[in-house]
Amino acid sequence: MAAAAKTPVSAKIEDYALLGDCTAAALVSRAGSIDWLCWPRFDSDACCAALLGGPEHGRWLLAPQNQAARIERAYRPDTLVLETRFTTPTGTVRVTDFMALHREGSHLVRIVTGERGCVALRSELILRFDYGALVPWVTRLPHAATSFVAGPHRVILRSSVPQQGEDLKTVGEFELRARERAWFVLSYSLSYKSPPRPIRAMSALQRTEQLWRRWIRSGAIKGQYAAAVRRSCITLKALTDRATGGIIAAPTTSLPERIGGTRNWDYRYCWVRDATFTLQAMMNAGFYREARRWRAWLLRAAAGDPAQMQIMYRIGGERLLPEWQLDYLPGYEGSRPVRVGNAASGQVQLDVYGELMDAMYQGRLGRLAGNEADWQLQRALLEHLERIWMEPDRGIWEVRGPARHFTHSKVMAWTAVDRMIKSAERFGLEAPLSRWRSFRTRIHDDVCRRGFNRRLGYFVQSYGSRTLDASLLLLPLVGFLPIEDQRVRATIAAIERKLTTDGLVRRYSSARGRDGLPPGEGVFLACSFWLADVLVLLGRRREAHRLFRRLLALRNDVGLLSEEYDPRARRLVGNFPQSFSHIALVNTAFNLNQHRGPARQRAGSPRPHGRRVASAARAG
Image (cartoon, rainbow, N blue to C red; front, side, top):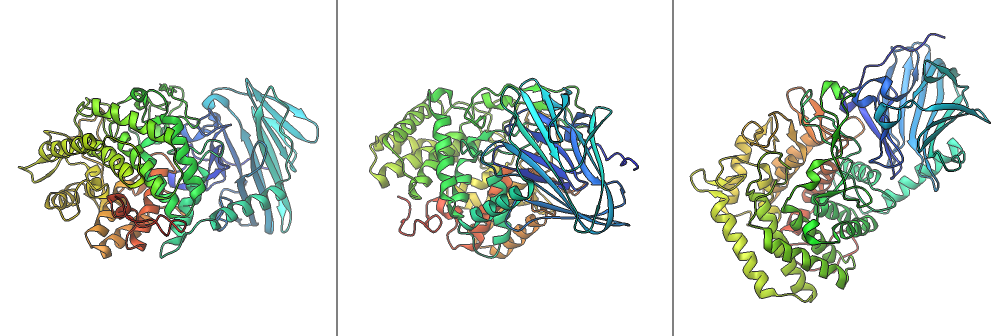
């Protein structure tokens, strides 16, 4: 049989679909190539890294040998089981890809089913550990299994198709006719432990499909945009570690915010900044178990000396995220450097205190049980914030330029104090309320005096600057000022005039923002959802729906969003899929479907979160 032609170095970002088992994740292209796979954890070294290089850096291609195939794909409804249909001149086959939700080990399963005619196919597995650098030692095992070992890693391929070695690749060529089936199971284990026990591909498929559907039915998702919300919730669940409850920002590193640029970061970690948005999304969707476990992860991660609280952690709460560059990888479409780790973890960012306190307050409103130890940790963190809130920081966008007095950071410091006061008042918790109220007033006065540019007539990115920032859309969403305030309305109007491109919102002008990096990035999708949220608060609901539908149209064919979008190239950019984008989608959908959705809940006029807290009253 003829060998398959080489596939491109990497597909477009929107041409990938996510596979995951709540411990690890993979990306598979429309062409049937798994170009990204990290094992055994989300933040482990990749053993398939073609996404950031070429096939020689690791990939698993399973596709017809005829490259002229017509391709269609979709997830099975309410699951993370992907079906890709290849139609060639000689016939049609269906490839079913998934990571098994299994009690033991991590297993990537691919099942090929013949539907019509006869199709010649090829499986080409290239495993390269340590982000494409390390060629494994390959041996044959009994029962037609192949073992790949490199240092602590072992991967075993079991298949109904005979495999052979070919130029440091493992290849299987076969033909399928209608109603015939072939299967492949790739399993991970540590090399110094017993090999993973085999699983049955079809049984794993049935169980995995059932578990995904059972989980999504346990929620409370209704309304006009229910299908989109379900898909986003499944994506968020797939990015949630089942052992720790932590939710990663994305399963990838170094997918560029601008193709060919240097704004390439590792997002395979958990951000404290996502806390409140995530908690609200989960509770409003009815997934209280996930909300509870996420809040528990936050408390464990933040525990310790308040002065050592970080903005992000690894999936288990580990604090060390040293950043280095993989110079041997050419990067996605030449976007270099390729980074592993994230130096921003050592930055001071004041807004994370507000996010943590708000998340704890929203959790208590949602009847997520707290205890005295939680409250004492919060008090210690607030005492530390009292000492440092006047210092400059690196802000919500983690700038690598000079530290500044970012307006959003100060607003979130105010939010931290405000939520602590409300928690004490509403839930009868011991607190120095008089001191805290005075503290809250000082921050509020400082922001209104120094963060508002009277000459321009709107709030600005940092004290003394003239730069706009989309994070200022959050002022009414966190309750700092009401939506009726003319300063807020003027700021929103300025953002609509100056920071929108084709109706979508940029974070700030990267050419003027002095963020320490070369200019150029796409529109930031979460900010565009925030604009829809404030339009709801302004009573401009028709415009909000229109913007939301525009954002939904940016999802790829299987409902996934990245961090940003390039309106000129009409491409998704940034790490993918991005949990922050999907969290924002869920919250905006609820804002559009509910009279008092997450925006009003957070701003201080809450209704109950989800179906389990029907008796919850408004905030204190």
